[in-house]
Image (cartoon, rainbow, N blue to C red; front, side, top):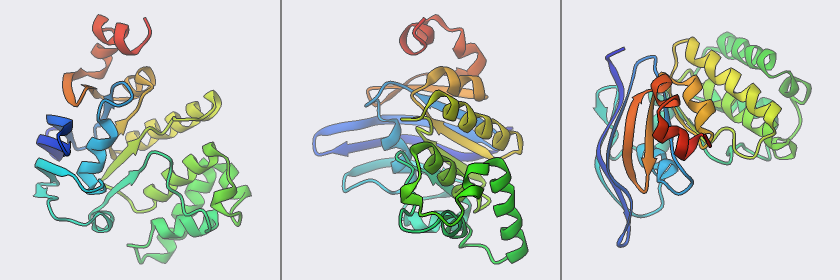
Length: 240
């Protein structure tokens, strides 16, 4: 698993005189599930938005390389064509479209009609609650149902890299378990994932490798299973 899918080098993000991200390096190799953990406000979401070019006006420096090519200057809507998909914090579903229409939007870069229909059927099998509500407006769904839909929609594009931003946020424990089951299954299919998550224990249990971010800096990195038993991680992020 040595081939870089994503490589971030010297990334800084500054809003005026305030540096939210302070020169970080991270990489995600083909087939890996990498967790980026840290306290609220550490700069994790800002990092994902810098990767995808979805930040509000600010000063961004450093390099972001995806599949060996720079993403500098790419507009975010072109990333899906390059097989890079993101499930943003807050889900970002199309609230005035049905579940079915949301899934179709996820596949807008594809033209294999039979494959698209097969994938919709697949995600309805994974998330039966979506199938039951296929024609319901996405904005009327619960938070957990919207998270299911956002993940399924992103996966409809057949991404080579999936970015997940706080997928467990605001969900019930049962729903969190379901979402992480799907994340592990998607990873097992070979899809490369960068997971930003405040629930450090769940994230590291699912991941191959992890990074800890604190106050805009990467303060630790390593094998995820080793990090789970590291006293510093346990004390700061696992409540142990």
